[in-house]
Image 1 (cartoon, rainbow, N blue to C red):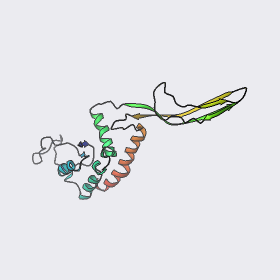
Image 2: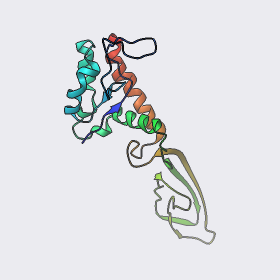
Image 3: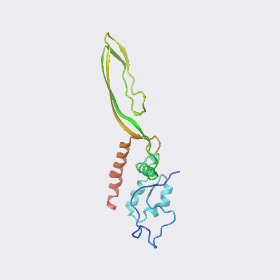
Image 4: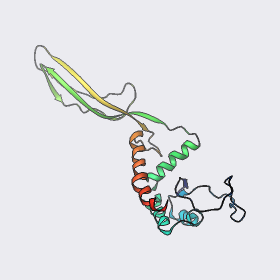
Amino acid sequence: MGTARTTSAPRSTTSRTRSGKPTPDHPRRKNESRSNSLYSEQRRFRVNRERLIGGLHPEAKSIIRRTQPYQRRNDPDGHPLAILADINNHDKHRLLHTTHAIVQDAHIEIDVHDIEITDQPTPRSGRFKDGDEVARIGARVSGADPQMHVDLHETYGIALDEVPPGRGEPVADLLNDLRVYVRDTLLVALEPYF
């Protein structure tokens, strides 16, 4: 069963007083959401769409419908707006976003004398903790004066936990992807209706 998620998408038109309360001719219904919602289920969107976006231009409503997470049939919770709403909800409830150190990119430079490399190393990337093996090098002595110099070059990052909303994604990459989606897809489509 999907869950409703809040976002700051365009609001429907409602008369309000200066304090933000609905005017008497437009009273707020009990349990009415104060903001528009994102839905992982089409049924829930249909039930609430008139209340949430009924006063918008028909094309703006169509854009909002097409960008609902439920439109992604295989993974609605992986939709950029669903992830953004989940992160927002975690923040509102002051839940801890667990993060982990990760190696985003790594390469090894090896300089040898009188040593033959038998297994080329493949540096490890992804999550790690102190004491984890980062690479293994297979080598065999081939002379009287064996020497090996190894330089490991790594790019470190921080990733969210494996569970939603972060799904193990690097924090900077995920936030940038969300920013680009909202800026280049959603806001561009809705710009004529602002």
